[in-house]
Structure formats: structure tokens, C-alpha cells
Image (cartoon, rainbow, N blue to C red):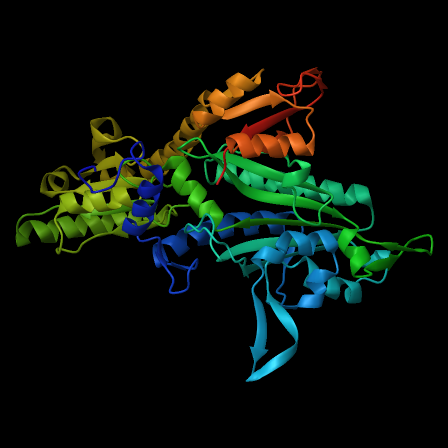
Length: 481
């Protein structure tokens, strides 16, 4: 263990993750197996994720709504592939009000069915299209193996559901929202995701095609961080969601659905954290800066706290999220370790000598030790300099994560090398022309799956690493959460 009591990532990555989320007070375990209690610090992180996404949704013309969490079981059964894909994870309500229900109710695993039920009422004509709706809700999928944020029986997410007049419009929407997710992940979460299309066996149950943003975590595994699905007319046919066309005929609407969940919190933790705890990108951090005062006497305390108040006001005037820890229950060294554990991007230290100089000390979380500290920053420049430092930290985290991803992605031409790369917990980039059954066999033998066929394809043709046959697309294989 390190001096802060966290198991190093290199020693036991899973134990490191569990310890960090507990020590940083992000989450706790709920009394029902597989559930989690998101603590205020963790929820604040989720709120900033939510705000960054919600702003982008509204900028692209979407509106928020809310649909019930209880769904008639018969709704789930209407789309055959959908019910087959979700049946093992469904939570059913069979009794309520002291009586057995005439029909079991499903606790929302996803909302395609109930939303289609409503769309079939609301959509009558081409004038009613497109429908661009999103909702922020909880969902329940009864998982057998769980880990907070990454896979839990209940989690929070947003799910967008849109309806369109043409197949082309639905496909455009699917890719538009994939790009929205990628923009958020790269620019707010500082995670260099790879956007791409899922393979047939990995796509969403009930979709025509599924797209994903895949992120590399600190242990080399992949995390599916957001998905966007072209549903075609599968659900509209099941629910008879039709519209009057401009030619006077009737046609089923074309649909999409897309979602990002609290899994993104886990992604931020694992993409950036180190052996001291969290490292949070400034645009998502609950506290972008923390001010830690240092004093030894009451006389020093008064002048130091005056300076703390002045600097806090300066930073807040600049629009930054700031916390001042003026408690005297713990010493400054303990506070330094605590806020490093919590991943606060910037620490500002103020002691008696700093007050005399009318200056402060900056320390950045992403660069430990002397390399990340600067002394003698004039107090009247603190707000401006803090903003500059935070922008640099944001940029640095993205650059570091991108370098890590690229260094751990290998172009593979044969099965032997593929096995070595996957065993080393790296990503394998391959030419692929295999079948669904061959893909399943690779998963059984190595634990790796096709994470996606990247949108950015090299073009041309080459030999499939597995079959030796001609291939016209590149796939990314990896082990995943």
C-alpha cells in the first residue's frame, strides 16, 4: 500500500478502484445487492456530466420529458429481439396494493417500448415529425456481478428517443448523437474515445445498428461509455407507430435511441486516477480548486483567513468552483492528502509568509511534487492564473490519456500476436472479415470482443488476421468492463 493507504493500481487494479471510490466518498453500497448510494461528492461529479450533456442535447434541438418507470410486461414482449435480450435482467412487480396484479409490471430497464406506446398516440402526420425527446431517469437491470458505477442493478442515465420521417434522417440523428457523446467525452471528460459501430452480436437488442464510444481505462481494458442506436422501424411496427406522409399514404416512423449512464463516472475514475486517488478533469470536478490555509498561532490564523477569503472571492468572480477548508480539526498535511485523494485539480496554499508577500502557492493534481508547484503567485493574479492552470490541466489530462491509448493499441496481423496483445491487456487493431460465430469463438478463447469498427477507417483492403480472407474493414478487439 502507499502512504495514503491505497493499493497501487499495478498491484490490484480492482481493489484500487474499490478503495478509491470509498475513500473519495463517491459512493457506498446499498442494502440491496447490486445497488449503490451515490454520495454528495459523487453526485456532484454526475451533475457536471449531466450538465455538459444536457446543454449539448438542447443545442441540437432535443427536449426533456419523463415517462413512467413501470412498464406493462406485454410491452416488452412486443419486439421479439428486445425481450430476448433483456429477459434475464428484468425486475418484475407482481403484487401491489396488497393484491396480485392482473399483468406483471417491468421496472424500467430501458424505455423504447413505453415511449413507442406514447408516440403511437402523439404522431399522426409528417407535421408531427421529427420528435426529439430525452429523459434523465433511473433504470433497473438485474445484474449478477456488480461494481459501483460500472455495472449495478440500478443506475442513472439519460436516454434519448427520436422519431423521423425517413431512414436517412434516423441514421443522421444516430451519428449526430454519437458525435455529441464523443465531443463531451473528449472535451469535458478528457477521455479520448473511439467512435464506431458495434458488431452484430454486440449491438443493442432491437436495433438495426448500434454505435458506441469506446474508452481505454488505466488497466488497458475498454469501457463502452455511450451508445447510439438506429432502431429502424422495429419498434414502430411492433407498436403501430405510423404517420400520414406528404403523398397521403401511411408509413411507420424511423427511430433512434441513445444513452450515457453513471458508468461515465467510473470511466473518469479509471481513465485518469493514480496511486494517490482520483484525478478529475477540471470541467467535471465538483471543486476545481481547494484553498488550504496554514497557521501556527491565532494571530497568524486571522490574517491567513482574511487572505483565504480574498482569494476565494477572486476565484469565484472568475467563475470557478472553489472550496476553502478552514477547519482546524486536521493539519494541512492531512488535507493535502485528502484533496489529492478526491482529485481536486488545483490546490492553493496560503501561510503566514504568503500573507506577508501578498502571494499564494499553486499545486496541480496531475503533476505530483515540486514539478507541479509554483510559489509566489501574486494574489491579484490568482483568479486569472487559476483559470489558466485549470485549462492546462484539462488539456494535459487529454494528452496523457491519448498517449496511453495509442501506446497500448497494437496493429495485429495474425492470431498468435493477437493472443499476446490481448493477454497483455492491450487493444488489438485488426482487419476483419470473420463471421458472428468466429467472433464468439474469439471471445470464448481470449475474453476479447469487437469493441467497434471505428468510424475513422483507413480505407482499402487487407487480409483478415483470423481467416486470412480479404477484409475491407478494421475492428478494435479488447477485453472490456
